[in-house]
Image (cartoon, rainbow, N blue to C red; front, side, top):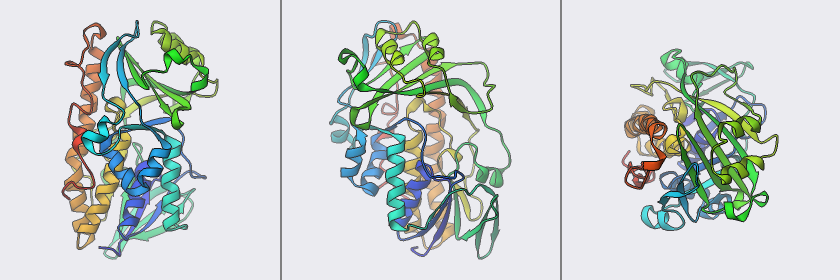
Length: 389
């Protein structure tokens, strides 16, 4: 059905992917974002082959290759010595095996590319400073009501508004996000500030007792993105993401290898942030009437399989294909949920399983046979462009 008008609540990576895919399917979209100026905070994000299929299709491979960095190699290293424990296949091997690259990108670069492509289709479809509060449904359509007094009406409404989703609250009640017991710090370091001896392999995860430090290149290799994970009994800050003192991270990872210390010492003072990791219980349904959920609103992902962005990108593409295959909006939303809910829930739950595995493992006993990741679960075999809808 090509005459559908979709209201999309949230202009993050998932919302913009859905908007662009729906536009490419011939639909009209209106995207509403609560921030006053469209943009994307954050640092690096991993795009595994299952999601790279979608970006190549929607943005074109040339643009994806331009903004993304394909690591030539990767490894899991011992936290104390820096010794390589597990080599991971990178470079051209994932593309040969799965048909698309394993790559990393600065979140802001990907967000800007998606926003530009959506605006090119329809310059007036992106609306900022629009905080969603409630929805109203009738036989003729569904309306979104915003705190600024704006109201919008369309055929369907897609909640892409993250783990704190107000759309989810409207549909299924006010279940509260739960602190998982893990916290993370992230930052960006200019590659030029680092000793070349610390630049290989392109991506690496340092496995330590109860802690993990991951670093990889973004911005064509000009920046190193790092994410450092540890555990806490509770998260008491009001903000889920705030600026952090690099001394806090240095103290937490003081026993990690010299390469980690070099990265932390090179972090600019304003480029370190920390946040608590939260989740919500799985939903037995995503769709009610003309409204459904997408991305973290439907299946909030912890980062322990590096699939948060990938799952939202998959959702957006499959939603558009479901709409294109359907005769009406009920069939479209049913096709979408039937195609996505089982996978989204599975990956969400397996990320928790992998977290428990990571934080209980003995780095001195880690090898290829005991290492588990998204690839070993078969997640890279999925292609959102061809999966049945």
